[in-house]
Image 1 (cartoon, one colour):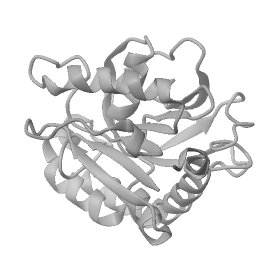
Image 2: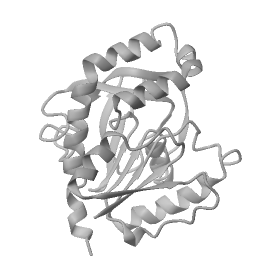
Image 3: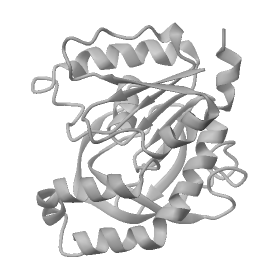
Image 4: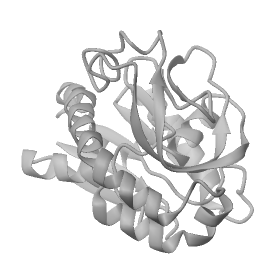
Amino acid sequence: MRVLAIRHIRREGAGSFEAFLKPRGILLDYWDIWQKDKPSPEPEEYQAFVVLGGPMGVYEETEYPFLTGECRFLEMLVKTGKPLLGICLGSQLIAKVLGAPVYKGNAKEIGWHRIWVTDEGRPDRVFGNDGVSGGERDWMAFHWHGDTFDLPAGAVHLAKSALYANQAFRYGERIYALQFHLEMTDPMIREWTAAGKREIAEAGPDTNEEAILGGSSRHLSGLMKRSNLFCDLFFEPCKTFQS
């Protein structure tokens, strides 16, 4: 079994998802899409796809021309019916190819913030009461974004936060989009925090390095448990597509 992860910047890898897949004998290949000499992978070689985050906006095609080709690639993936997950920028790209507007939000949401599971999200097989949320109506997730999106037509709204109404959605049965980061590990959080001091300062007085790292000590273990459960449920249909 093979999973393709589309990476937009080196430090935004698959984190705890990679740690879940490797001991189960599932190969994770990275496509570093910003590298011009890297050819497009063949979708039929993979049973699932993960589109990771990045600091760029989906509307910045002039500065990041690879985004145009990536959207065409995602349009093709949507048609395969295979499991497809977008995280942060990845969720915004999926929203865009499904026809929804993506735009700058009113504030940056960085660090540990609570999300609320919607009524529509509670029965969801992966995200809901019998899945990641475990019957809890709200829980702490890690965030790092300033953009947001409208829900695509036909999507199921799964979660919201105090700052952003659209934190997660499902489209069809196997496409999931998460605005927050479920894949975080402690080294990733420390690396992002060290590299993102300017963004942290722009997020307001309640957002600072001490609060982010302190939040990790309280919330990261719970997030990683949810990450493992999400992976167990999300990647399960991959067996259907094994050759």
